[in-house]
Amino acid sequence: MAAAKVQRKLSATQAEALLQTLKSRFDRFPHRHSDLKWSSILKRLETAGDKLWSLNEMEQTGGEPDVIGQDGTSGEYLFVDCSPESPKGRRSLCYDQQARLSRKDHPPQNSAIEFASSMKIEILSEETYRQLQTLGEFDQKTSSWILTPQEIRSLDGALFCDRRYDHVFVYHNGAQSYYAARGFRGQLKV
Image (cartoon, rainbow, N blue to C red; front, side, top):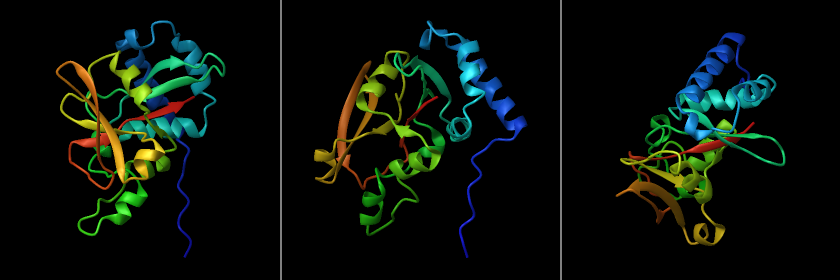
């Protein structure tokens, strides 16, 4: 029996509700995007297709996506999870599939990389994570996996970040580890 194809399109009602949520958040946090106009972002979102579905997935898993910038070349807007803590619906995950499959006892249900891929988003890089932290104080009680360089990953390690003592820290851990307070933040270019 073939697996059911995942519906990656929102109904008109779902799309309208998401756009209202995004607009409300955009208005509530102007310091995240002071040089951007909602009307331009809305125009791009209205023709975004699958990307609206991905933004909705970010929202439904507790990410609270918001615009934090625009690519000067492509004109794409960068949406990032701006929830105060690592998104609740994306915690207790090891780093990637290889790490998940390597666990002999008590493997987690999913991994950060696999989960992000299923949502059609990317995990934040260290650079984007640090950019986000200039716009507020995030992950003061939780931590978030970030993209890990291959030379670290090939040694079974992975990187994560948090904010403590008013500083952003980058740490390492075994990629197969997972904790109730560690998830991941995603980004999507629209």
